[in-house]
Image 1: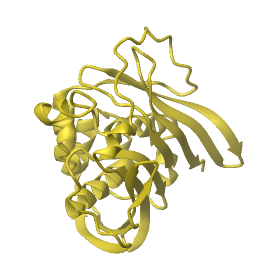
Image 2: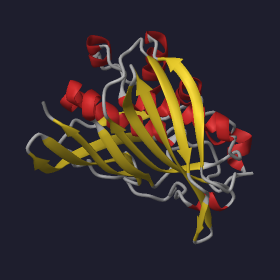
Image 3: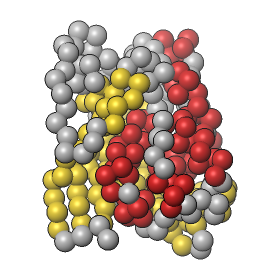
Length: 270
């Protein structure tokens, strides 16, 4: 049962060890060497860790669905540093038959605010309508148009299990075939933050340290990635203002072209 008032939570602390960062990178399939070269953890490692701690605290009903996500990097999280997490949980809201909660996690490192991560989660049973199930009759999609190098990954159970271990997000919708089969999705789907990590990897490949130090994301989760699906992250420059860059970004199903994530990514160029 959700608490019907706004509240603040202390989600504790952890150390961003090389092993834990490596476990996260393995789970999302990111082999880019910049994290080791710079000693900086990827922004979504911190955001995913904060979300995992939050989910453990809230104990949401099985099958809760991630709908919206914002990430804003203030200062980078150094690998090996201690990280503290607090959260502001808004009063649950209901609209158009949907019940959802929005939580803003603040991640502090070395005595300073490093990152904020704002998540909106829809709660079953109504929340199941928030994402579109897979279109089994979709036609073969054409090449994706992307000004940035496309990141393409296959969704498999090994990856989902590894991500659940690395992030702490053990929602049975991603892990339990029997449970997932009884939902309107009809089967296991990938974590939203896992597929969003492919966008972060694409941005890190394009902008390196600038992304790690100032990257931000504002996205909506629109569709589900199933076991066996191949998905691809794309990005196109949409606005440039001095050192500021904004990209339209997304993740789609490579075969059908179904849009799974859409939104923007921004950063400052030093």
